[in-house]
Amino acid sequence: MGFFSPAPARPVTIPADAIGSRFRFIRIRQVSVMLLGYALFYVCRLAFSATKKTMIEQGAYTAREIGYVGSAMLISYAIGKFVCGFLADRANIRRMFAFGLFVSSLATMTVGFHVPAVMLMVVWFVNGFAQGSGSPCCVVSLARWWPNRSRGTYYGIWSCSNNLGEAIAYVVTSVIMVRVGLAYGADMAWRSGFWGAATFGFVGVALISIFMRDSPQSEGLPSVAEWEGEIKGAEEKKNATDVRRGQKIALTSWAVWMVALAGGFFCMSRYAIIDWGIFFLEVKKGYATETAAWIITLNSIVGAVSSGLSGIISDRVFKGSRKELAVIAGILNVTGLSLMMLVPFPCIWIDVTAMVCFGLAVGVLLTFLGGLMAVDLVPRVAAGAALGIAGMGNYFGAGIQSAVSGYLVARDAASGKATLLGHTFANGYTLDYLSVFWIGMAVLSVVFTLAVGRSKASR
Image 1 (cartoon, rainbow, N blue to C red):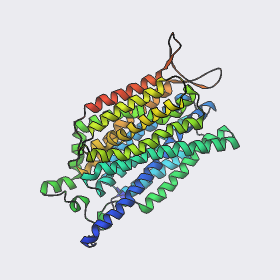
Image 2 (cartoon, rainbow, N blue to C red):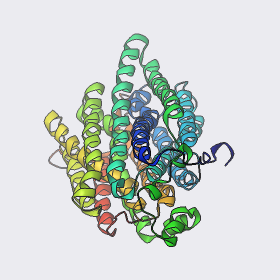
Image 3 (cartoon, one colour):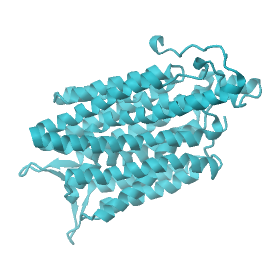
Image 4 (cartoon, helix red, strand yellow):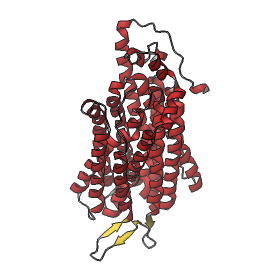
């Protein structure tokens, strides 16, 4: 692995009575850096979401080109998660995490220079692979620094980074675009959105490099499995150290692949809102960009709370089982999407309620189907591999969604404005195909979640 080799272990020289306080100090710093650092991965990735309408209407790129670019990015992200997940189990996660965000920030900055569509696809493909290093590094860090009994709790806290990143991306990018657009025109507006996001990313690289740590052993501490008393015999010790064996368990587990499939359908509906939610509210319901951004941002804020609580509830109420809460959240996901998309007129209260329902659901599903249910099924040393498999399924689904969604959006020849393909019934009600597609994927996510067995941390 060269530069990315794990930090070497140091002898345990800390007095036994000081080990606990040292663990607590580093854990607080570790989860804080992961929370903010991964949120900034999202800021770099989601600059596209707030700029789509402006790019299409300025003629910078067509809706289909943007859809294909988004699809390429998400597919490369799926591949990146899979590859980086297997590598992260054997890597220095601080260096890997920082390097991934650095490459992503460079790619985001490049898009702001209005590169040709083909080059845009290449740059965003590279960005997707770099983005794939983020969550495996964080999940491996959680496995290295926290015991199994509190895995769900801290995984849920870290999962808030997704929603935090979405909120920052939507609000900051939209505000930058509006202000720059008023001063310098619409063409500079969308470019500035990418440059602003890249700046946030470079700040994140510095924070990760300074404050994150690789493993307890590299800090002169015992492994968390030893410290927490999880190793009780020769077999447990072998499982705790044999990375190859653990990764083989992950690869051959039917349940892990079912989590990946359920998560893939969930991510189709989730990324529909992330990638096209603002656009949908602007085009179908006529909201202004800033209003649409605030409505969509609401789901991220609610989702952050939901993510944080999901792990705590599953650990304490359901005794570590995730399936029950995941099914409830899946039904809530379908409800929120239906409220927003099937009501044909703008109503701020209906759309806000829809985003609250959607946010509550996404917080739980992103935590569970995004990886925790898969990680629970494998030994600690294969946490990255399990997350990689789940992530690959999740983002292949998201990539398919991006391409299909782009295909279902057209540019009106007369006005030059974006429009949605659909069917108008005799009573005048228009059902757009985007709504049918997005809600249908959410329903399939619930079906496949029901097929997953009870996922509970046991290793």
